[in-house]
Amino acid sequence: MSQPSLFPEPEKQKKLGHAELTYKNASSIITKASGFVDSYDFTINPYSGCSFGCTYCYAAFFSRNSEKMDNWGYWVDVKENALALLRKKRKKPMDGSRIYMSTVTDPYQPIEKKLETTREILKELRDYHNVRLVIQTRAALVTRDIDIFKGFETLQVNMTVTTDSERVRKAFEPLCPSNKVRLKAIQEVHDAGIRSCITITPLLPVEDPEQFAQDLKATGIDNFIIQGFHRKKGRFVKGTRDAATTILDEFNWGEEEYQRVLRIFRRYIPSIGIGQEGFKSI
Image (cartoon, rainbow, N blue to C red; front, side, top):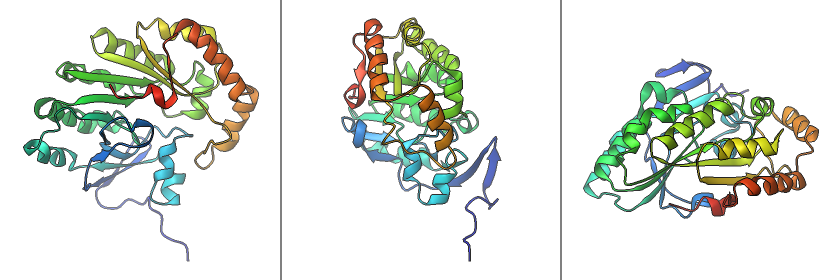
């Protein structure tokens, strides 16, 4: 007998756009940092799941079961007690802690515009904890919180931009904002006096590396991180491998091509950070 789907319409579950939302109480929102951000102390993830659903996202493979993994991008668990959990830390402030937000979800995915969970977490961190915070996103909504960012002593906003090609972007990141929208948003953050970084992680197939590098440099931002897309190690959620493979073949995208593009980037951005080393804590 087949198991019932995880995605009916149970109590407290609603739809917003394409994603199924489930409201849950989390046991914690603060996790000891590890992996590529192990130079930080903690990570904060306001949500589980991510409605941006990038086809190559490693976070999909942390899903609790195969159905959630296969439906990556079409479900989000809202940690409705996130702020309450963080408020409990007031008695023992996390002063000086290096925090990365977020590692397995985007803190500014579409539902954040309505719920403002991330915004409330930021206010709590600003008002009660003197932390060193890095925010990772690929959403223009991040500009909404510039007013809060200015209240932190040490804060950096990372914007992920993986390609110059909208065709490539639509194949690998179909539910994400366009490349131009992301670059405009991070430039606005930078122009507001907020420390900013563009993370080209992973670097997907590029149509015009020279122009792409110039466009990135033209933002006025000084901090960049790049990481190759490891095709042989690549894991794709259900239904995406054929389309991704076609584009990778078309661009002959592999280590040799990545190194060629990296050499071009270094001509314009000599200080570009590479891989995990580039993600060292601020």
